[in-house]
Length: 145
Image (tube, rainbow, N blue to C red):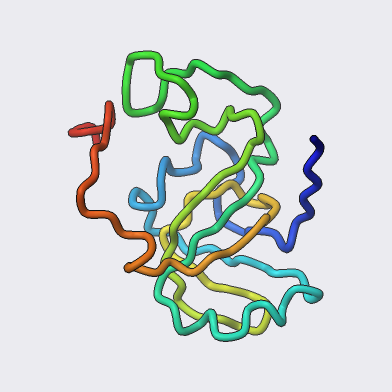
């Protein structure tokens, strides 16, 4: 089966290299601009009423994939699907960011952890009742953040 995705926009950030890009949004205080292409701008109706959004994007500078990785927070090897490591088979990233404001087709966000120029695949509102889970096991990450 082939799945075709097309970018709906591009993410602009101050991070020009992978080395300077923070690991996870909670480690970043930086602002970014999420540019939604004009043909999709209508889909932003009412998004400004949410405090946080979920960005799905393409790791556009990643050229390899690995199934076993050593994540940034650990010295042990783990399966890539038990991590947030970028060398994934489909190179898809996910970040939950603060939505500061909407300026037409631009969303100004805070706590961005995305490499500049990343193609935007989708945006979803963060909804506490849907997305927050209280009874959570954090696996190997427990105590490492």
